[in-house]
Image 1 (tube, rainbow, N blue to C red):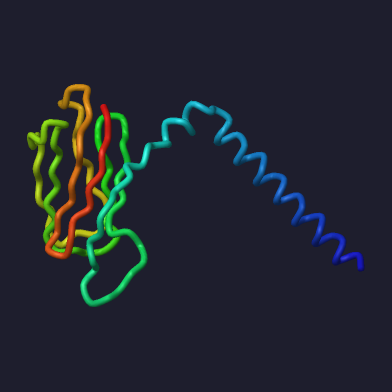
Image 2: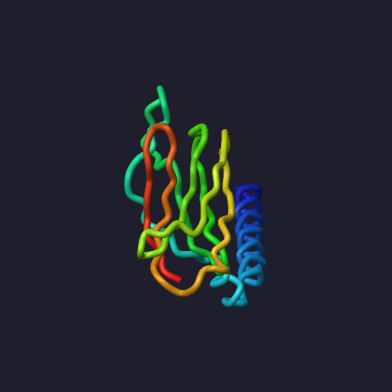
Length: 131
């Protein structure tokens, strides 16, 4: 019984130490706020090929001076375009055979409403964002 009580005391002590250390890491709320971003609601669908997945092919997040696009599976060649509210394409890029994330610069665009499109051979996903 004494060994069991000692074990519980040691576990509780290590949990309290970990909790207090983590609290110190995030005591500055400004740092936590800088890690947040706004997700761009992408509509449409890009099919993954022969394997059916329920995960969205691409997620996009608005950051301070760029859009972070996350590719959840390899879609082959994907064309990325950004157009203003008049439909004029202001940015275009093509990514091939890629899984991971890429940064799309938007700091040189003036304030306004924009659309972003990701087009692959198996579909298109499009969303709107504002600067």
